Image (cartoon, rainbow, N blue to C red; front, side, top):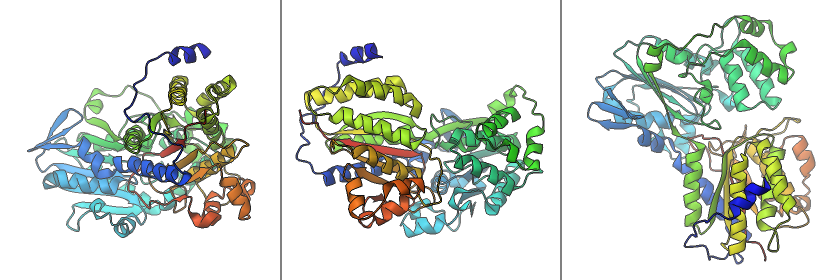
Length: 519
């Protein structure tokens, strides 16, 4: 690994025109303000109307998508499910509404009023729309309303013929908004299983694997019911790596989930023995895995039109406009928030270490920890090389960008979310004996971090002293998973990230501002 670092140090890097801008005179408030602006740019780049226009083109009676052309002849149907789907549906109808016959979308409870109150009328369907809007899944949990929506969508897709074209709009939150439990299991029983998994720290990939195994529509079930109609799915990804079979549990991607896969996950989190008999009954059924028929492959087209990677690239451009040196670490950060926070703490120490050279053990610790939280060794080497180059050539303040979806193991009953808890954990990392002026922001691109009104929070090396002076106990807050209450009470909530419901979702964005070190 040391050889890789030594080799990467010799690489020639492009020298940006603004590299001489100094950061020493920039105050902490300036860094925080720019961190918030960078986050806003990331969210703006994956707004529903923007991604749909980018992926869906119209040429007369031809619909162009994913390099393919489909004939429009009053034969278009639309279904959708997810946090961003309402805005996606509105833009879709603006583009192809003259050929739209009927549609139905399942969206979060209260989203229409919320978008209206936030002045985002463009994300709303007109009163004359042919698309029926159904709300459900309060706090991103499947409920009876979402189940009725799923039944309506299933009924629509099952009635289509080979002459029809079905557009399926999918975004983050789609799994909770399309619950169709396999009988004899009830929705409540299925929901109890996934809730226990989430509380135990299961990843989104593990949760979606279990959901597929217990569902009628996930794992390609929706596309199967639409056959022989042509299916085109436009996907706003909220899963690391954009795997089509895991986004909203893959309703348009044929993927047989074997019962033993589900059992393995349940065993891992010690939940197998407590399962209701109906769930065991579903999992006891033999799944005959067959080769996917060619006609099924031909009638389904899945296109990712928005992702965390796109958001980070746009955030990087905004950081450059603000006079910062942007570095994208990875869009795949995952794992326990404590380990993720540790990595960011180490990276900040490496980038801002006083003197010419940080100690070699810092780089070694970073390279060892990175893979544990989803960051590839090459990405770490590349990032360390850039950070070292910056400190040696005086490029000024750096904006380190990353994204993904870390997890929190619940030990308490407080209010919070992974972004606020990560910000709090990073604040602990920053509060060491040597404070380097770094600022860290973690925010959910959907504007909602857990069951709270905040998207996330901003932290720095002064957080612990600030909390202590106001009588707030960080350790007890973390034990009780009560980060939202903590940040709400701290300095009148000024550290909270409160963009409101954004109408989109591509996981989380992390922004770390790294001042130039004192040499």
